[in-house]
Length: 472
Image 1 (tube, rainbow, N blue to C red):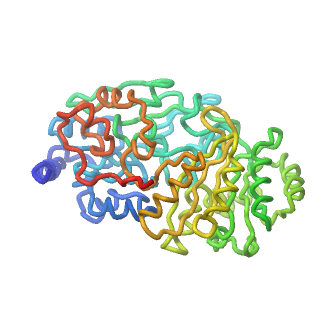
Image 2: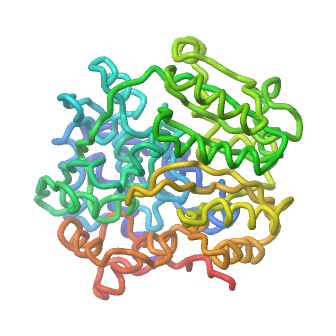
Image 3: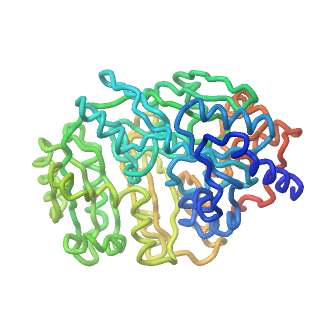
């Protein structure tokens, strides 16, 4: 391994001389920053990825420049790690074997919006894509809480969905992502257009099996969303309101985020709207559905303590979206560095029963945060980003097992191997796609265990660091 790393570093350092017209980044501090994402949310990943970094970074702005970098790396056997804005949480953009960091944030043009479909280069920021779609009366179907900085390609490669998933499901739901334009990693790179299910074989694989250049996605008619917070004294009342409002077919919404006490105390900038020791539900609701929402809040004994129209949100440059999804975890960590989180998926048929049972079993140690959504199959459900007071890795794994014992799926955010985060539920066709697009195994090597099983002669060995062990 040492010999491979040394040889790679030496070769990567020569690339700026080979391709002098590109925007190369060799400064160690900048390369170090570009080698990181928000994996520090996990104390386990913070430890396991310490010291892992690329040798050099490059920021191409055209397809021709991307092709030059890819061809040079493929010819020399240099690892490539594709990066957007680095808003992921699992070390997706942290190279395990050095090499070149391919920063696609400069490859960011909107290609077109035609009716309810839009196409853009992978480095476009989601906020920019959404804003340009709105000029034509459309909006993105989903916005993660990191939408101001996150890129379209980054969301596709390592994300899930976001606000809007309550209507359209996650990215993985059929019909959300329509096509992908991707480049192979070969001395003579090829461009391939993938559509439908085949395109989704590149989704959420941390950029291990293809370089995504453009994405074509379905849009939805734009709405001027009103943002509200409803607060409740009782856990069950807040939970049941969130579930009932989220599933109400006649009340149009884009976001329903349930945060149990004491999580709201971490939202310091919203303190005046969050009564002490109360539970909160953060909402994006269509103006014509606000009255129905307020009636439902009252029926559950709550009160609306915060309200801003779309115009007020735009003028203030502050949005409740940046308190939802994993921004909830970020706000908590700003106040208390001893916290971390897990990701959970409930059974649609038993979701409230499971939530209440786990709240009773782990209250005080696990703080309940739920995002209401549609599954990729269309069922109404909730997904958890629970906040945990971290003690030991062993206890963290025990908590995740308690969730599993209650019939709740865990997508482990404390591992950097694709299969481990998916509980080894990986479509074998993903590895087949990697053979097609990355025959030398140069893309983000070490993150896809199945590649080494299928390709024992792959040019780079499996990572030295082993993934986190699951404790029963």
